[in-house]
Image 1 (tube, rainbow, N blue to C red):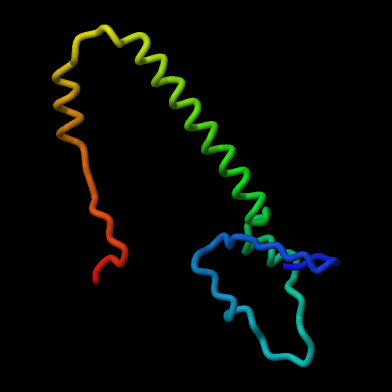
Image 2 (spheres, helix red, strand yellow; image 1 turned 45 degrees about the vertical axis):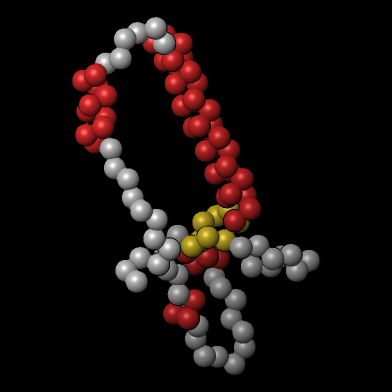
Length: 104
């Protein structure tokens, strides 16, 4: 979508995949999309603003998580190893092999 100065913005679709072709109709003149349809089909922030907000949220979650882990380490650093908890963690761990093209 472009503004009056031809600066283009990209918006993320709310549904994936979003098929543009399903919205194309034959006509004599180009038809502008209806604003209500745009609001229903696309996230209301352009990709840059969305990514900046997402980065801020990820940094906040990571910071809070690391703060909790730091406090736990400070409180528990002299404690003996809990073998039962360690064995439960090892029983439940999973690892996955990276596949660039799954199924080929």
